[in-house]
Image 1 (cartoon, rainbow, N blue to C red):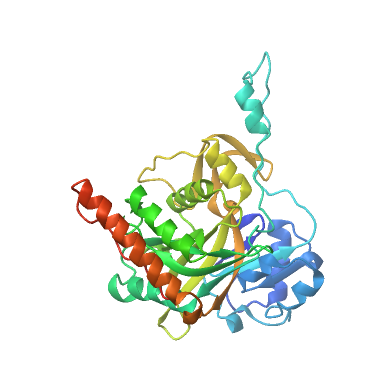
Image 2: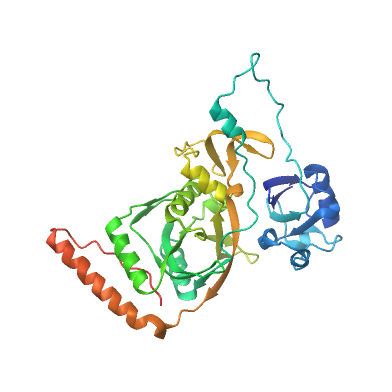
Length: 369
């Protein structure tokens, strides 16, 4: 069977005999197939392993510490994902032979030289220390996606809240702009005037736009990626537009559980600095074909990944994991400011619309405060 191994280098695959083998044998296979020494490996089924920074952090991930434990005891099967932390450096396999350049080979242009210097590596640490959701806002978003849309169509919204000096983001409400959600695509029909109104309401409450949240469909759960190529491009665009280094992108998905049912999961990421830089400089191919692999982002020019010149990059290289918490907003804290701010701005917006002869295009916010 095939196991997927996610590390700081992206997603790789390991061929194993079956779920009966012990963890010790799996580590030996990782050593032989991925060239990572046994003593440098830490394995876990918990993705937070990738956030570990110190030996003490690694000790918290003990679910795969016993080398005699069979994979079946961890409910691992064909296609399961494991997370790997390792010390040191390695060269990712698959490097091609270097072709000659100069008078007997292809001449290199200045763009080629710049591309040769563009190396994409996994960003270890996010600028956002963590993200915390107001429970009611998070529940309202997932409930609509789950109960109304049945995770059959994508849905998205902008998150509003605060950012602490330490880089902790708190999300207090979610604004869902006009949009068209499909099975594998989400088109935001953004209205600048409406967004100005939302921003003004948020500012009146001492809040600002801090990130983007979107739901994947149940069909996407059957595919082998965290973000699709379209989702990476959209997330990079919104991150770049924000100008906020702590900007967070959150994905909501439905995943099967051990009892045969399904649970709603929230996962938070930041787009890496390199991802945002490449987007700003126009490196991403923005047209998608039917035969494109959704787990790979296409580049207009070669970049270097693991010592290899490529034009397709595993989307995971652009994602930086962010820890998630929750909190409860106190109603008494801002309830009066909320009512007064919304009433005033709604009145001004309605008045302006009537003066220009337009219809009222205000959509309500998901504000559980």
